[in-house]
Amino acid sequence: MKKLTPFLISGLLLLGTAACQQAEKTTQSAPDNPAQNVQAPSVEETQAAQKDAQSQVRRDQLNSDIRSREQRNNTTGGDTQRAEGDLESEVRSKLEANIPNGQLTVAAEKNGTVTVGGTVNNQDQLAKIDPLARQIKGVKNVVVKAKVAPPTSNR
Image (cartoon, rainbow, N blue to C red; front, side, top):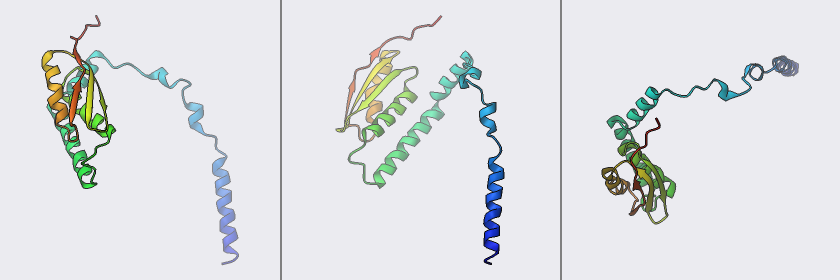
């Protein structure tokens, strides 16, 4: 056994040395500029992605994610005081799914106050902000600083 151990160790060292002799192929074959082969999505792809992001299935997924977060938060005992990041993220998800083409920002404070700013396309969307945000557990007050600004055409 005493003679076998040095033999095994030297064999491993020899194998490791041989493996390290090969140069990294990724650095030689990688492009100089990673962005050079990136193509912008087509208008159709962008519209399809937007439609999917605001579909009923996506809304259901977001609501399910929010419920799951709240259940996890309840089991850890954190249901009385929610982290600002959690509130911001959950309110943002809720608004993105339910207000198509809105350009909204969300900021939360420790006391459960959520401030929503930005623009929406019409008055109906503006009216949805407060009730949607209040559906998130831990939101105690909603300050809506958003304004109505109809979408502009880039043509």
